Image 1 (cartoon, rainbow, N blue to C red):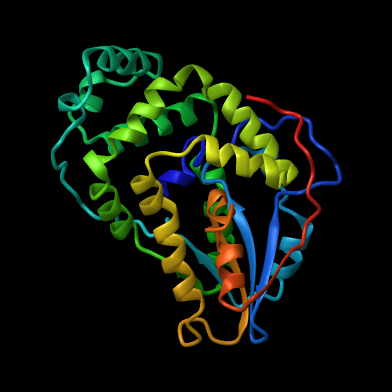
Image 2: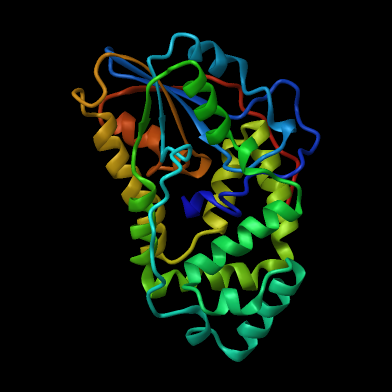
Length: 288
């Protein structure tokens, strides 16, 4: 979700030159009966992102199901209302001026951002930025693979519903104010950060991705809710042999859910899975 958005969701930018011998990271986890082939997702994208790593596509041929964060092909979006506190009541005068400047740049209505909760204001900014940069939701990895699975009548499993994701956003501290403040205050650095993120993702540069993840963290409580808590819940589900019986599964989640000691590969290893990186890591030359 959101930590997978922007400097997380938008791990998608026009590709930089990268090593021909490196691929986005693909992990493999098995307990002897179940196999999970794991790819970090980018939720919006361009044609330049494809084809996906060959080893991932090879495993796809024998897959018994696709597992995603949420099935975004489901058109039944839950309705929701904006609960206070709203953005206009939380920002200082100087931060409000910065937000209005961003809104003007992205051709958004300032009042639409001001009278929404901060987390929704962030999502509006990020989606508008993506579209302005020519990125498309229907070229995001989740969407492409969900469509492929549906066309092949492959079973689709979701780790959480969109309704559950929205409910989580509503429970963020001060409605996600720290995310909005980071977006506002780091706005001038967005281009360099995104260029570096996409280069690191494409090169499978594990160390660079880890350093970028650490540098773009929110408050401890927000990070726990957006990443750690969800990863723990997902691993519990993946460990359930009734929910996921013997078979081969393709697992696609936001790329930053795979990073660090609380990432899915590390947590699965703690649960007794044999985990290995299938792709060759590269080294990005970017700095931010």
